[in-house]
Image (tube, rainbow, N blue to C red; front, side, top):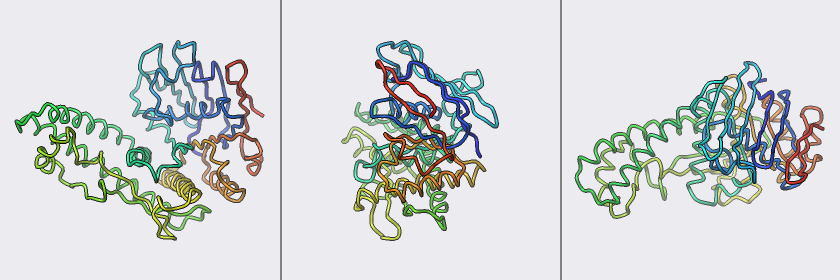
Length: 362
């Protein structure tokens, strides 16, 4: 059993005025009708990692309405014990405390590794590259918590460069330092991404699983290569970038290509069910790789995942989660969706009463 959440407490978060869950490390089955507040619980857990959580919400969107007095998420981990808090007061930005001391968001990723799969990701393979980059970077962040720092450094330098481009600044001296910063950060970003893909590939090889393996590749826009030495490429591309008013080269333009390995079919040409199975396969491979690297599996957040699987695949998913020893928080509209877990899981029910979500163990 790896590092798990022992207690989770929500205060004025989304539909939950106050909620507390005592967890024992087993998978967690959360059932209740649509709109009861199930997803809000796993969103809260996702905010115990760096970034904006599984809905990418801003801090002010997370406060319970109409209270709007701020919100707080608190968790205690087991073996070793840590106290994690993330919160916002009024209209303030999100803050983090670890063991009672202020901390940057990136520090959360060094304590808990959290992966998630939500229904909004079902169209990942057929929509824009932006969503696939986010998916790739979440995977990458699970292996390299400092990946977020590299991305932030790159994006800050790129914003400054884009401002020069929009202002039609032609003096090269204004660009050199920014392009050097972008190139340095891009090298780290690309190396981290390739490392993550190699770990996912290794975790899929020889794995006994009911879910299809996916071959992944990092590609540039429209299949073009991203220059390895970015600084001279950016310098050579300034005129074209100035015409576009933005930077057209770099890791922010990368895409994640996926192929159903045994069929040799690109993911975007697979059936809806196959695309979902590929996503689940990647989340499980990510979890296996982290368990091998760290000696402990990540926490998994799986929103409404059971509803889209037949009985065989549902049971297979639960078996793989239990074999990993992972603490997985799963939501579903019916308790029966989790029957094959039996006593291997804790069960909670969520109901909506008077505009508030209420959580109880069953």
